[in-house]
Image (cartoon, rainbow, N blue to C red; front, side, top):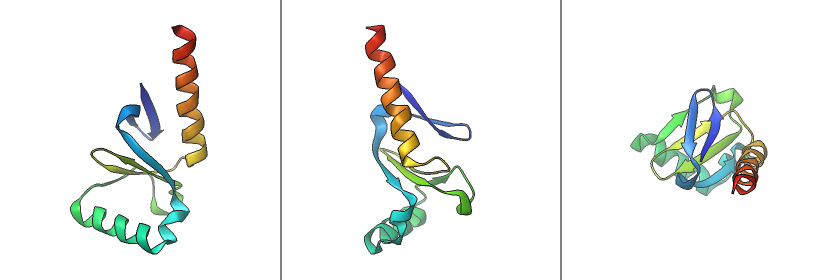
Length: 87
């Protein structure tokens, strides 16, 4: 199944490693991780910098999403529930 991250971006749920709140970028280790990812070209912004709410880490890229991690989790859970109902 796919998860919509904002804009025109959807990713396969199985490719998602972690979803982090954008406020975690204030942490020294997260800040370093994000800077390295930017330098290596793995960051894919979906929103303007002032509207970023979450980082979605996938097997290939890191997306900066305008959608909160709570909303993304709810969407993800909703997808799972819908799949179970269909089976």
